Length: 99
Image (tube, rainbow, N blue to C red; front, top):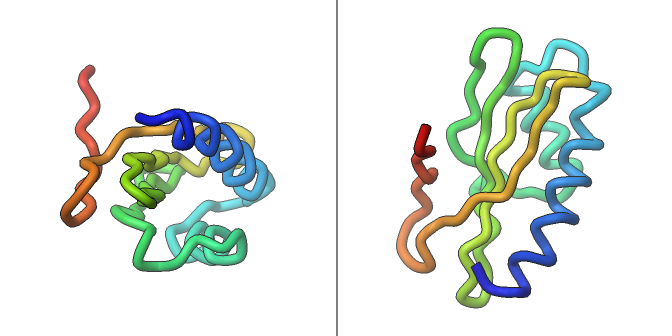
């Protein structure tokens, strides 16, 4: 991840988390509506799906050779949004987590 991506990641993480914290019953449709309202286009939102009481998603933020993406789990006050790294070129594929 380059310096530009690193700096931008914090702003994206914060604004997405703040937008989702107050969301009651975070269904995929409600999460998409909030993400769209924050300016994230549908074609950049990936793998939006319900997982128990939360909705998980990825947002492709790659631009100008960058590799930035964010991974999120919308769960009201338990919302978590973290930066991730995507391949620099080609179609977006969500990164796999090493657990």
